[in-house]
Image (tube, rainbow over all chains, first blue to last red; front, side, top):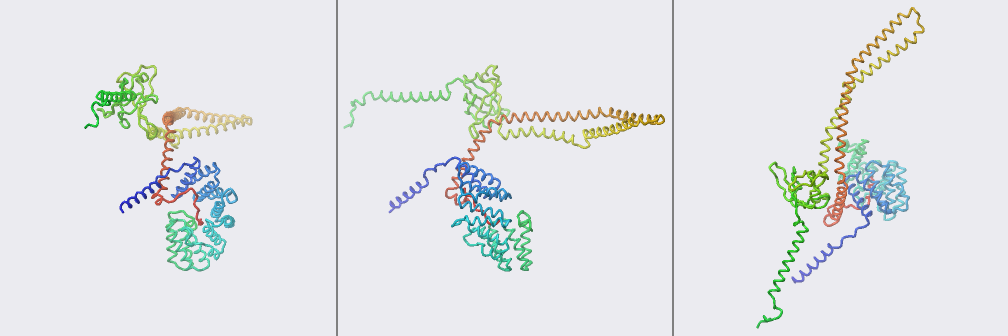
Length: 265
Length: 322
């Protein structure tokens, strides 16, 4: 009995040791390694908010991928670079980095769809241009589309901007499998659409759901946008107390963060 | 009954055989010791040299002494003397002593970024006789980047202050230079006015009648008197003005000399540091690369990969909310 237990234990240990003690992975070509390292470091820099460094690293990754004719890698680097350029308030540069991608067949279809989607997000203030890019992104995003939820929410946002709150209400996707940031965005769009349709109580409820999610995301721009809308909805509903509370919260954020919602405040 | 008989032929001369084996073994061990000693330079005649260092950091007995990059000896002893300075004795192989002169320098160096320290003997006038037994060398601690930066700072700051003072003097609206220039400008304007008056006088001379001549002559005399007064004033003020300008120029010249000396010092410091910079940068780059590889490897292993946020080479999808 004991002998069998010891044997099993030894065998198990041997298997575990064999699994841990495998041969080291063979290093790849130098430029490919460098490109991978630059892309990895760029993602890490972006995660900690070091956008300047992330932009430099994505540019390095882009140059290295181009040098080894890795179009998929070039596409990823362009998408990453454009994203951090937008955060650095350089939307024109970001659009330039992506401009050729949607129409260029050398990039995978998924990346072309993402490029068109990012171009639509960059151009969101210019509704017709954003709509054109969004239509292209929807056409390029083959099933199963990895960015289906962001595309639907962007569609809903543009519908709101085009003065069609009913369509926005239908298109906003706050499904449970969506990421928190997309769920919060969908709730925010629903709140504005419901407010525009005169359903203030439902609008306030949807907005409260968005605020809960945005607090978890801890993004000042989103929270300021939420409180700005909350103040408008509360005024429309005649709730002076809620409006004053929203204004105080908005003032608190705007005192320390320069975000778009504060400029119109 | 014994298993082996004493008369077995294999035991013949057993004592001699064992003795020979032990002797050969001892002989080989001795030979090995001699060879190792020769390789280490234990049996080579050596000359003792000496220097005094301000600080004992990096100085240890046994560290190498090099000449033109070759090992020529070792540090024999490091001790603190009565003046709280560090006495260092070197043992240098006698065959290399011909290249070491009384004015040679002992410089504390380091192999690479994190390598061992060693003493490099450098310099020395070729026409001088070799250093004698017990001779004393001048010690120069190698300057690190921080020391070079500190040294540069100490030299540059007074020069910048001096230049600033000079510029303040030049720019001071109530200062000598600005006042002098203002005076010169005023005098020049007055001279122009006088010149215009004289020109006007000459133009009008043709139209003068004998009746007007006395008045004209009087006006001319007044103008000339004014010119005389201005010239006298200029003559009085010019030496002072020139003295002041001279003083200012001397100040500026001193500042320029100091700046030039600073540039020479800077250049020397940069020349001293420049050869080390590429290797430092290369080593630093290699160390960073290795560290990054190690961290990447560790971050992909259990359990660290569960604790760190995921990061891959793909760009994340940005949110649809601008």
